[in-house]
Length: 112
Length: 112
Image (cartoon, rainbow over all chains, first blue to last red; front, side, top):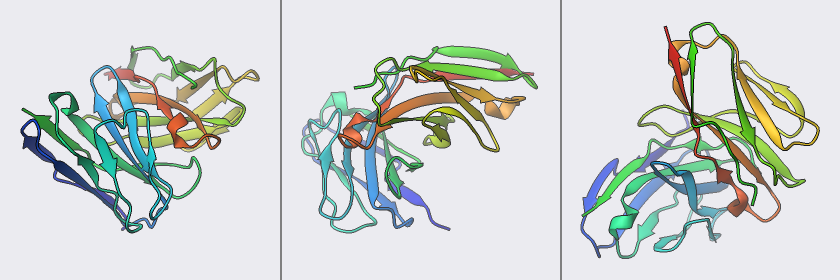
């Protein structure tokens, strides 16, 4: 069955370190998204991609970057982790337009 | 950007119908309304999407008045397993996905 996976599921890192969170989908979807979820804020869009070599900034993109070298993967990189980036990160994909987004299980990141 | 407002929490009992209303006064012409459900430690799951009037699927109905400034998610005969957070999402294709805004969500508790 097609799925979307994230790794690692849990990560503890130190302030200033570079961290990369992986997202892999086997739906063959063109659109992929990264969100962060914090108490009281719901989900906020970080970056999104319409397809290979395409990336776009979302609502809270500062301090984050993404790259899309193939259809299946959209890794999220925190260039220099900050305590304010402690959060739960969700990756999602969709086939077209504003259709149903399929979410991954999430990565809980703690920056100490 | 079309911001959404939902009740923070709601309580219900098994077998009752639950209606959750979302306000989106600044909804744009091209915006769709989408609802997601989220259980603890899981990614959100798509419930239903609509543009105007009424949409129904096997799990819920979505009512959208003519002015589209609000929408109501209706869950018929809820069970304990419907206890979750429900998000109203408003966004459109014009302007890209940076217009996708998740609300803070409504925490629904279903009691025996």
